Image (tube, rainbow, N blue to C red):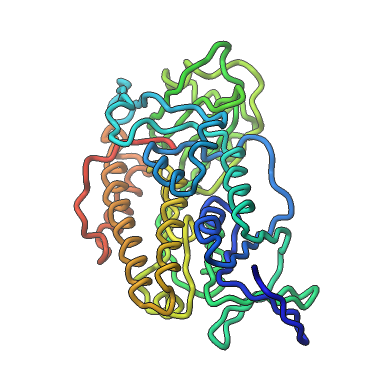
Length: 399
């Protein structure tokens, strides 16, 4: 475990310091133990309760959960195996897609709080140290180590590797002045509804309209999420002072109307979901990587929720980062190049998929939400690293 050195400042030495206690940070901490002494720092002192947005996992995640040694415990949880997808996208007529056609198998509709708790407990039991409630700290680098100083008690944590796992905000990369490419200003409005009596559906329902796109899915504990993704500058937001107006708009769509109850919903909430990427080709990013800085999860690439890959990417990038660190990052230059190359390929595939998805639906082509995103996707495709061919036409999948 980490050692404590008595000096004018209390210095505690680690192999890796991870800033951000979300799925990516906890997964990386567990993967690095016990060969590395790991500290995870989180600014929040308490964990939220109640339903949370971001409740879907693709079938391929089973490979990552096995690698984490958490697969069996995941299966013991209340998560629901995802069934078919029902989408009214390119046409008004809903289209079914059976989960059996997914080569990785069906995914899951999550108890998201329970999933986060599983990763938290996994990091703890591995021997990682988790420091919560540290809202303010100084970051410095000297003598080949990163320093995180707690001003209130003069405690300094030092490590040769610093990892940004702060999520979509990319707070540490921003603080260090690394360039980010913000691709969109998408906003998600969402609420949680009581499920209909005897509702056993495990279907993801998605549909497009002139101002954005919807999804709904039943989640554990008798709840159903209803979410709408639209432009943050759309005046629609100001029309939804009450959840009832939001539900009334959703009921215009038959595939949503079928599952919306008359019961009182939870208050309407908003969450920024626009995609953004850390510029891995920038000279400053590469210079800091040579000094032992990595970003993972949403801090590296925050996916548009239409991709349905956000949580998967958090875990997958943690696996890739763990491999790089175990291979000698940052001393071994090849470890960084392998990680960087893999993440660039992920970005390339994602950009192709996103562009093809937002190319439709053609029936709303003249509306600003879709026109703006078709144009934005074209700009993404012009980037130097967007060179890989698309595997297939993107289909809208809920997050």
